[in-house]
Amino acid sequence: MPTMDDVLEKVGEFGWFQKQAFLTLCLLSAAFAPIYVGIVFLAFTPDHRCLSPGVVELSRRCGWSLAEELNYTVPGPGPAGEPFPGQCRLYEVDWNQSALSCEDPLAGLAANRSHLPLGPCRHGWLYDTPGSSIVTEFNLVCDDSWKVDLFQSCVNVGFFLGSLGVGYIADRFGRKLCLLATTLISAISGVLTAVAPDYISLLLFRLLQGLVSKGSWITGYTLITEFVGPGYRRTVGILYQTAFTVGLVLLSGLAYVIPQWRWLQMTVSLPTFLFILYYWLVPESPRWLLSQKRNTQAIKIMDHIAQKNGKPAPADLKMLSLEEDVTEKLSPSFADLFRTPHLRTHTFILMYLWFSSSVIYQGLIMHVGATSGNLHLDFLYSALMEFPAAFIILITIDRVGRVYPLAVFNLMAGTACFVMVFISHDQHWLNIGVACVGRMGITIVFQMVCLVNAELYPTFIRNLGVMVCSSLCDLGGIITPFLVFRLMEVWQGLPLMLFAALGLIAGGMALLLPETKGVALPETIEDAENLRRKAKPKEKTIYLQVQTSELPGT
Image 1 (cartoon, rainbow, N blue to C red):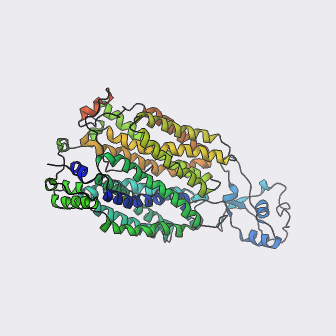
Image 2: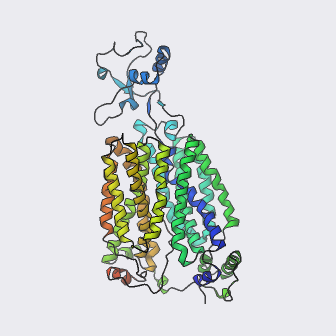
């Protein structure tokens, strides 16, 4: 009986139908970008100072410029551990007293300003920005600055919890139903985020969007890889993730044109309601239908694909079936990932690689955003580096292998972070250039580790292995905002030192993995244990389709 791959060879592995489905689903990948890293624009922190009604009136009476007002009324740099008192403290002075002069008004109160008492910002803050963010609207600065970290962590908590549940729904009820449900909920929660009346509501809607948005991205990835033939799955998977990069580029442009965070959030959320059109544009996966013994529907869809591709339906199409795999009869368990010495080693290394990739990738984006001279341009430049990253993967993965590129680009990302520590803030272009090199390196690592992860496990625990190891990616995303923004309060280069250490260690650990280029995918635990032996040529190239959580390099 013919299998799905046999039929696809006859009706077209990447014909007109697959190209149309691919371009349609790539819109979903691009729409995921604002959810994943939108914090850079939604929660940017501009220069700020305490609001004092008396200072405003005195400045108006004296005709001060902004620079003069800041010089006369805002505290300067403080001692170590309190680097920005001018942003969080004000002089305990009655600015309404008539004795204050317009020229250095504090001179008559104390010989040295450092002797004047400082107090908290009781009347809020003034922000030097023409736009707005959740920071400026909800005053998430100074003692409440950690709430920005929590805002981003919530979406990563959603990613972590949702990817497990959505994966089950996609396998139990179908890819198409899962895709439609998650995209609709994501669109609704995105709009609700834009109109959230308070900070708590903002967190709840952000968490809800995280629960479904990554799952919809993964479901789109699964669908497109199940529609194409074996020879195109890897390329289509990488290009699907490249569509995420297109979303990053578009996000930087939209954020420049729309500086108000609520309107920006609404702008990136409303178009996602159009994904409901997938009901008519994208059919159910015939592979899933066959797995559910719904052969008649699967055959009907394959006949439709043949017509779209301009090919005649195979004579034996009605005998279509899944390729039987005896290993599927084995029941996978979490303990299998640690059962043997090599599998145990592989699991721990892969967990670390997923974790470090997530921390460095998101951390570099947040650090560039927090230290940027021009937020929109710097974000754009670093995003553009993901395009050559995809090209490098496509041309090296089958020529050079997996392990050495994985190690080299981890080392590249770690070294770039280390070099950035010693670059002066005044050398802006050099700093951004090195950050872009690091961004390209960690993007390559992100996509490479997903492939390596899948190739190191035997068939019956392959999806479980990818799911468990890649969950460390979301855990890394949960703590990254706190690592970046809290450590920067101690020293601006401290997060970079941490990223450098994570990347360099990951580069070394990657070398401990066996090379899988030219090696058949393991079918049993014994096969997986023997991967370290000399590689044997594949009798038939096997392309894996991963149906669990993976993050775009996104």
